[in-house]
View 1 (cartoon, one colour):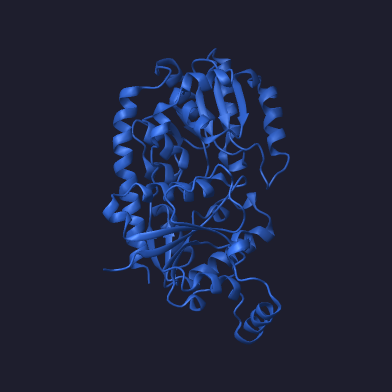
View 2 (cartoon, helix red, strand yellow):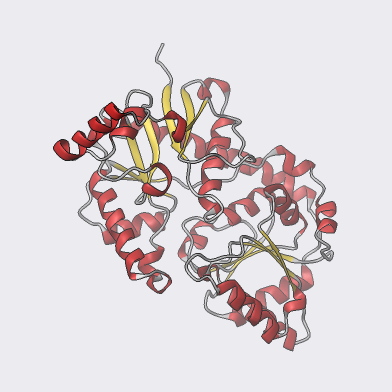
Length: 404
């Protein structure tokens, strides 16, 4: 009998990048729901460079490795050997390689910056030997929105992606759009490109929760739109608030509830700028800022909302859109290429740089959409989402099995 494929998932993100953490969490979840005969074909481990958040579920994992405890100890002999590896062989990752090689058959994802989470520098391919791996590039935001990055950040990201393009035999993208960008920017890379569109697995507890109770917990009105994005500049909250001001001048005053971490590491004063804008535009009373809330609370608010609004100017593949799809909740989304590729059922797009276009969409749905969960729509969406999530899991396993 063929032994199970030993897959090591590398933890991403955290409070500073919730999308990365959710990407890994959801990938574990979809794999855990494969039929038993398929799940038995692989072992799934999580590799984390720092202690996991207490709320991070280990369900679906065969093993969890926290590197501070799992890596070979930094004894004098080991440090001497690692130093010789660096000086004589140019191998800077001996400590991680000593942990991973022989323990895993496939590692995913290595990115263009692995120092921050697992202290690994590229290249690493040859050192891992028989342990295969795949890179992951969520998007090329820095190429399209360079003003949001410092010169140092731009250079670091370009250098990291170039190193990944040269070292990886397989690179995964969450969208055709990102894969096309890679071909444009790195036409000479020999890596095999794989598109793995992720889909949210609709946890059963979502539909057992009490959305009305969560509404009351946050003292929210019965009708509202929901925006669930971190307060980063490219998430485009500023234009959303401009759209609300346009509607207020017409006597239309929808309530918008915003969840998400209220900080942008690239611009420490940005959230305060948004607060000032809300008051200057006269729409502060219409916008409820809840900050970073628990995942189950966010889901219940999404169930209660009239619709989800996703005004972002750039995404790799929007988790918010996928969550809404899984709940059968309509989405008003900006017309960026990735959102159009995601194409959520019942959604409508608006011109990404036009507050007037967004205002029209908000006004129409504010007046016509019913409040509260639509149980029939949720049931149908849940069935479709489960099937899409299992397809996603099988596609991941296919990539893991066939990666060079």
